[in-house]
Length: 332
Image (tube, rainbow, N blue to C red; front, side, top):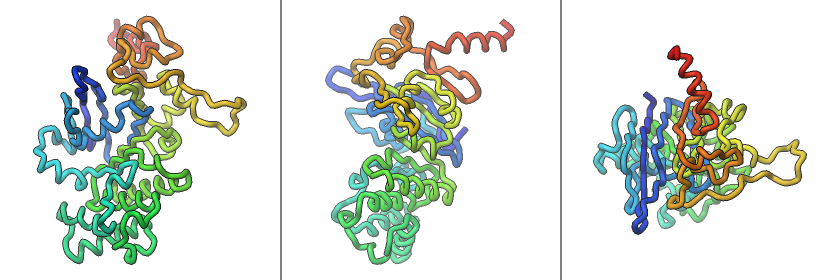
């Protein structure tokens, strides 16, 4: 069992008479001190998955079923008061837009201090000093002088550093980083990811990294979940995934990455678009965009199958291989 174990999680939203299955049977385990990346296009269910883990799904959304175990305890059985102590204390989250996490009318130092006070990590002058130390740890220049500055006085990259300081204030066991560099330029992106790596190592944290950027995945993750339309399509160690992707969707995502030695003038793209949750295909949800689609794909949803140790894929292309290996082990 890992530090965070999600089993058959289903989260849906009601829109009129329609039930929108945003997360549909997702399972994964985050190990101690590991970075697990969840990748996929917008609309794949990545952010709803981690919001479900944090119990931050509000009506018309709801967690329909599943289990979310953190350090062996099921978070879905926690009261809201218990969850308030988990959020920001034991599990912290960094969002893609820092201004959504910061109060524009309160000095940034006071906002970091508030996290410490709420979770009883420090109080009074000690809380202020620790807040300043956190600002210094995330490399805010002249942290003591800037303690009283409002968020608008900081650049986007500096605001993201403030949000990271808030997230790390109580030395969490798990850090969830939801597209933490999306709104930043490439240079600042690299600095923020380097900061997250350093802080993860210093605090012995586990990290759940949500992104659509496979470059960030390659440099920062240990394992990867590839999601599409609320389903996990592939799971593997990062080196395995980049060396031998199996699912046509994963291959399509990788083909979209610009290459320095490319001999073609145009980038490749996956045809079509992510369908609306109310219009998912009847079988495999990628079937309407897949270049290797078969009739079976249009009628039946394949299970997530383990092809080799730790490498899983949800695709009919591999079902015979799995059956043959299973039959061989059973002596059939």
